[in-house]
Length: 214
Image 1 (cartoon, one colour):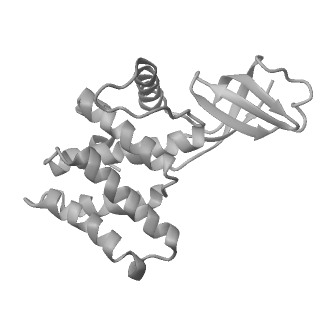
Image 2 (cartoon, one colour):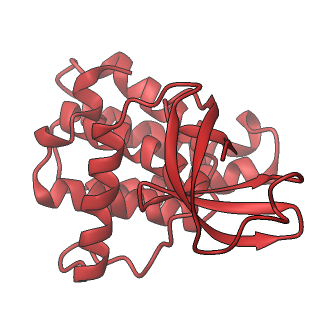
Image 3 (cartoon, one colour):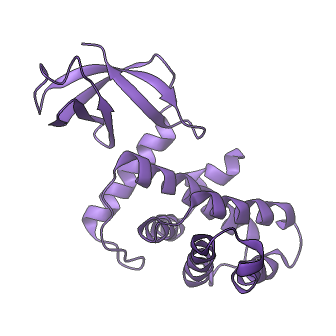
């Protein structure tokens, strides 16, 4: 993934809203982000061609029409349909293939963020997003752009929920992770602020798991 694909400052406010809306729509439809990744990979190979945009949308339609021949399950066909419809709905006014690639690069990353961080997804309204949703989008963008997480890094976290031996932490006011803490769950309290250590990261650099070190 190149820097330009994930440079949010190169997107206009409207394009940034589109990236969020596509990600939210695909997550709501339980679409496999890996299937979107394949479409992005295809676009990347042709992005410099003069007809890249039209070829990309044709490729998405081909995935749907030939889904039974190339997919491994009915779920995969549903993923193709969801990706094709969502991209057609939200990207139809954009003719620049490089811009589409930038937006979809962010969509892929945001999908993982929405799914893994437990970020609530409200109603989608691209043209007039609600103030709450806009604030959330800005918050997510700042966290994802400004943080360079490292394994063993110590962070402050707020305990938001305790269920049995499972503890849900809120990190940086945005990221929510639920971890098994058999030795800590009994002594921690909801609302308490503690120190957690990053145990592992995902491929995109976001936090995969943490452990309380207080």
